Structures are given as C-alpha cells and as structure tokens.
Image (cartoon, rainbow, N blue to C red; front, side, top):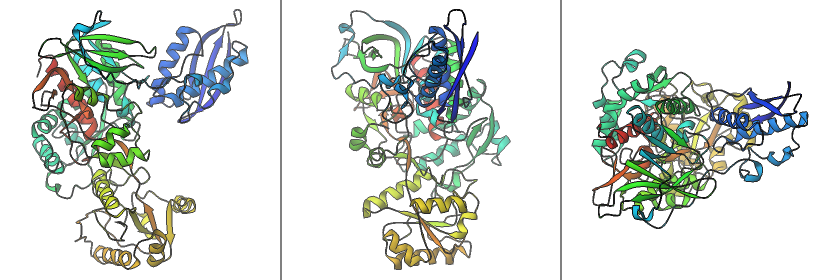
Length: 599
C-alpha cells in the first residue's frame, strides 16, 4: 500500500487529502483527510464525503452542497493525490472554482442545493397511486427546529423522516453561535449573578421588546420551557460553560438578566454546528431518518372535506417526484423568507434591503418554502417586518461584556438618533428607518482615543488599513469630516459636542446609554453602518401547540410549523442573541409533542 497526498485551500485553511493505493491493483483502498477544522460546517460535509468516497472507492464523488468550500477543496486535493498514483486522469482544473460564488454546478462536481420549484396545483390523497414511504411524522427541513423535532419524535418511539434541501444538516442554525436564552436554570445560577431570575421575568422582557406584536401564549410557552430544553441538550453531551447578557433594550431594562447560555466550543458565528451535530447524531441514534439534497415541494391533503394534511411531495437530485405519507402530522421547519427576494419585497421591507444588497448570510436554501406551502392551503402569516441585523465588522451591541466604544451614530443630517449600545437589531431598525427617511447613509463617529477602549473593533494598524481602503473616513476636524461624509457641519459639531459635554459627567440624557459613556477627541473617524443579516422575522401563524392556523384562526389539521418558519413569537426587531436558537429548539420539540399528543 502506498500513500499519496495533496493539499488545497478550504474555508478555514489548507485541507490535506491522503489516499491509500493498493500497489498490486493500482486501485484506491481508502481516503482520509487531515487539517480539517473541527466543529465546522465543512467538517460535517467532509465526514459525509469521505464516507461516500470510501464506499465507492472513488474520489470523483460529488462534493456536499451546503459545505462546498471545504468538501470541494478536499475533493480537488484527493483527485490530485490519485493523479500522482496514476489511478485517475481527471482534469483537476474542472473544479478549481469549487469554493467560489456561482461555481456550484454539476460540471464542477458540486451539486446545487435542492431549490426545486414548488407545486402550484393542489394535490389530494386520491391523486396518489402509490406512496414511496410512510412515517408517523415528516419534518420539512433539518435545521435547528427540524433536528429538535426529529430528535423528540424518535426518542418517543415515533417513526420520523427529515427532508433536507442541502447535503448537510443544520441549516442557518449551524452558522449561528449556538447560544440559547433561558431563565432560572442551574447554569444561570452557576455562571451569573442573577440568582432569582424566572421564566416570568424573561417573558416580560420579550413581551416589551415585541412592542405589542407578539402572542403571549407563544412567548410564555417558550420561556417556561427554555430551562427544560437546556437540560435536554445537556443530556446529549452539550456542556454549558458560561452565561452572559444582551446589550440594552432601552425600555425593558427592569426585566433584564444575563440569560444567554454558551456551550463548550460555542459562542461565535459558525459554532452552531456543534449544537446541530449533537442533535443530528442523537436523532439518528434514536432511529430518525434523513434524506439529503431533496426538497419538499408540495403538501398532500385528504380528499374529504376536512382537508387534513396527510403527506408531502418531494423532489430530489434526479428531478423525480416522490410521495411520502405522514400518519400523524407534517412539521414545516424550513426557516423564513431569508433568501427569497420577491417575498421579502412583498412582506418585509427592512429584510428586503439586506437581501437585495446581498447582506443576508442565511443558507441559500432558506427560500420560505414552508410559508408558501402553508399559504397555499389558506394559512395566515404574522410577524413580518423585522430582521436579524448586526454589524459584522464591529460586532456592536451583541454582548453586554463588550460595550460600544466612545462614539455616536449620526444620520444623514449629522444628528444623533439612537442609543448606540442598544442590542444590535434594535439599533439597526433605527438605522434602517433613518436611512429610508433621509435616503442617506448613517455613520458611527469616533475619535483616535476611542480605539483603545475595551471592545474596540479596531487597532491602530487595522484602522489605518480601513482608512486606506475607504471603509473608514478620517479627518483632523469635525468640519472636515462632515464635508467628507456629506452631512451639515453645524449639526455634526453640535452632536459631538453635546455628547462630549454630557459624557464628561458620565451621563447620556439624550438616549440614556449606560456603557461606553466617555468623551472622544480628534483626529475623527466615520464608519458607515452596514448590516450583516442572519434571517428574516415572520412566518406562518401558529397556536401554542404549533398548529398552523388559517385566516379564520382555525387549525389546519395535520400541519404544524416551528422555529422561524412560524411567526408571532418575535416582533419588529430581533431582541438579542440566543432568542432564535432557543426558539427553534423549543418549537421543534413542542410541535412533535403536539403531533404525538404529548402536550
């Protein structure tokens, strides 16, 4: 046996493929990888690719959609290695664009995600001559909500099938930090000073942040059960290591507590893969099944007057339709309208601006399929308008341990307009409104002294690079800075002077900011506020049992929605880290318990 190896650049660095070749037959015996960053989406895809490659004794297996950068790099390296051995003669340049946008084509060896068109005609049980499979529960989507649903179904001895459009499970939840909000559990008491927090206080804060748009029974059920969900995940091997808080919600401070739970290996974007892999492995161990690279494209209803949902239509890589029967219920867990430009324009103006400008980082398969299929059966929608916006360059407003640097946000008229240390999506809603009202950008204004403050996104070196690239504008005076960013100098000078005067007294009477309150001086800098987006808010209207409701608030029998596929539990802006992941886990579990009569 002779080993051959080659390297290619993956998402997190060089990926090495090693191929064992039988000297007698000159055929591949085994393939493995080195230098793959663990607990990443790429690692999950690499594991699946290696399994297929070793089963087929071939390195020409397609890379995995949803993990294409790393698996594409590994595939290319493996082909190089086998070319060295003379086993294959594939032109490796055929996949040289594997990790680049727009290169996800059959010719490059990377399958497109299964974004097949939805059926636009109703389909009933009477139209189906033969079902290709039958399960107690069918789950559309294997992101956080779908995985939680499948795991809960399987551990309660129900047969369950997840249908996933990508080649890996996890969806956008894998791109998150994996953190979860909960109140009153033992980890909050262990890792924070909040010893008397309760789910009731958690509910009160969420309701205030919802600004009258939330359905209390959904929020109550979520907050009451969050501690139990934290415990449930710990039994899978998730190790909770710390708890912190979101930054300010100006009108809800009295109900605040540190509630954001972080697990070992979590807390940073992309660490959600740790959580989703734990749920996936647990679900599969309990007997759940999953089909990859396949989309649910339609719902099947009973042929009687009740129109109960009894199954789904799927379309896979072969473009053939399959029909699956759900004996007890179908759960829609396909996220919101994250990457659907047309629906965003119709339903969610702030999110539309982001996805239109390619600022949305949700997985490409988040097209709102579940929402459209529900609406086709007369389902109502709710909760649209908000979005999960944060500043990916500065990370501002994401963590109360990292205050905003001494700085102010100004609009196109050079006037301050918001508490800059408010939780990130609250701030970006204000930014969005100012920019739409004035049709001009907004800016973070700070001084040379600001960059030495705790939590600064800049060092002297990185700031100089951003100035050189044009990302940050520099000026010796406020008047000069105002001219460069096209705002009235008199307003900008007044805004900064008012801030500095109050900050010297440790106060902010304008917006009651409590952290990072300090004066700053020139040279002065302006950074244009730019959103990074992790999904839309809003979805199908549900009740506490996660039944999808029609326009008359009647449950559509057999149809359930969970997580960001559902609306009404999040308001006009995202209230802070750990809400989405906590909510999708809870509702995935709740939906299945409702289907099985356990809740």
